[in-house]
Image (cartoon, rainbow, N blue to C red; front, side):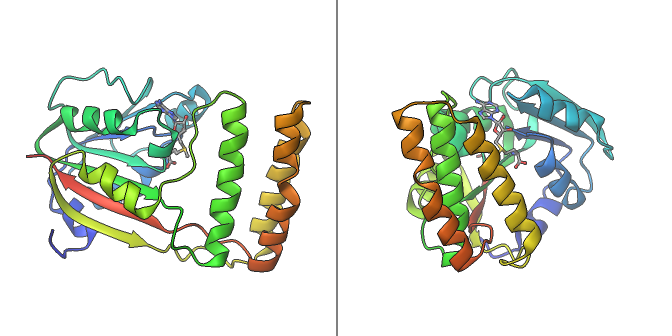
Length: 239
Ligand SMILES: C[S@@+](CC[C@H](N)C(=O)[O-])C[C@H]1O[C@@H](n2cnc3c(N)ncnc32)[C@H](O)[C@@H]1O
């Protein structure tokens, strides 16, 4: 592993094609493109048509294609892309190791896999708020039948990414600066989402148990504020 900043690793990579796995509305591709001066084509794949439509309607500095599909069954030839990226989505996958194997398959030899994923441990209290909120929402999703796991521990995430193979070029845990942890705007946003989720919960014992967790969540938020959880950013080069 070398000590270049990740932005430099990307800029020097000569990437002309980017595949954004579980791209949502394309936020990660938009974040990465300024660091990829030679990129000419972005393909995004996601299971959520509404998010893909938002990506289609955005302005992009190069050719883009936003496809409905499953990140675990990539419809691309081996070696199709220079860079495959995935942000905060590995914990949404039923088999994240299989998704990473697919990502490596569609990379050209020497191509890069970039994963950014928030972690669940070693967080100071305001960042624990993010984990607690996330874990509650992921439990709501699971009860609704949507695949959404708690986030990974640092060790489990490193093991997952290292297990994908290739040479690790960069692997650093970042603590995003973000907005004021006690800012009114972020707390109003979270409260609105909690209230809306609670209103939509069906009747039943399991749902009631989730609703009963909310006062403790609100107390944690009020006491410690809210900041985004620490994330791992890791770049791997395919042999
Ligand atoms: C937390 S969002 C992250 C979106 C985007 N990567 C970002 O960082 O802005 C997780 C995304 O994973 C997508 N997703 C979940 N399972 C998927 C699957 N098996 N195949 C493709 N997309 C999937 C969801 O639709 C959602 O857009």
